[in-house]
Image 1 (cartoon, rainbow, N blue to C red):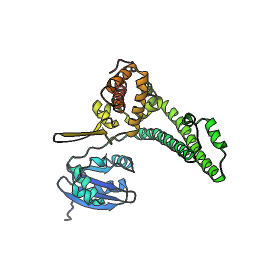
Image 2: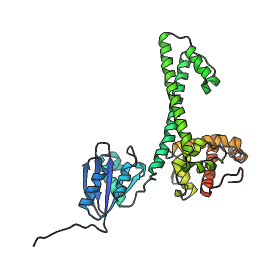
Image 3: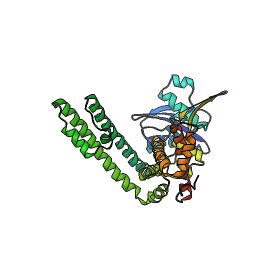
Image 4: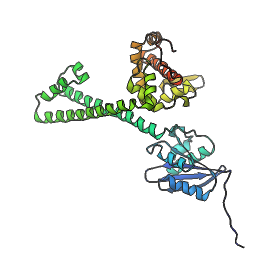
Length: 354
């Protein structure tokens, strides 16, 4: 009689830690008790899914990789194959001193697999494809604005270096009169070439900003965002672009269980180091949604001029701290107001919401 053996891992968990790279993956496979295998393969979620199901049929699969260049595409492929996959912030992975000194792809994938099997990892939020793509529109807009500013600064620096004086108020707004003046400057041939090239770079960047702005305006009028943007803009100091940035970056406000969790996501929390009786607070944390934090702080400077309640709060803060610290407190108030109108779906009434 022919003997048939069929594997069945029902009720058992299999963990896979992946160190992802463009050309290959290093993978560590573990059970709940021990490491099973470490190997390399092509960068393919489908290939790994097939391997797990073939070698450990009917198991409960858990996969993890670090957030990075590949985004969330692999996570979505694993989820589509029925495999539980999380993406983690590299800074949240437990690491020993020895692992830091002897870092390698093998060490990294084993570290991920072990931490996952022990329940030590928490995945970051995975946005939907639509939210991710919409978010990229406004991120690209912000990149274009920064590129335009860099080109302006290059021209200003070059003019100073050449000893050419100009009105700071004129260069602040970069009117057509100012750019025409730059084009009319009497310079030697080489200097003229340099300035023309820099001006061409600025004009190209400006055209990209205008094109990106039109796309942002179009996106803000979409039905999926229109209502929320209108609500957020009732908060003094918040404009259309900041409101759109908030809804695309945050998504569902109810995913944050508390206001502190939202502050932690934005980055409006202090960077602290406490040991014994000593506690060192060194400004805001480096872990932040930097675009959102910058826009909120920028909007706060507008709010303290337009909202009497914010003006009063800012003046009170300035009695016991520097203005730059006081504006951070105002930004937290702004964030709390935005959270309030989004959770309750009501517009903000000036000097009422605290």
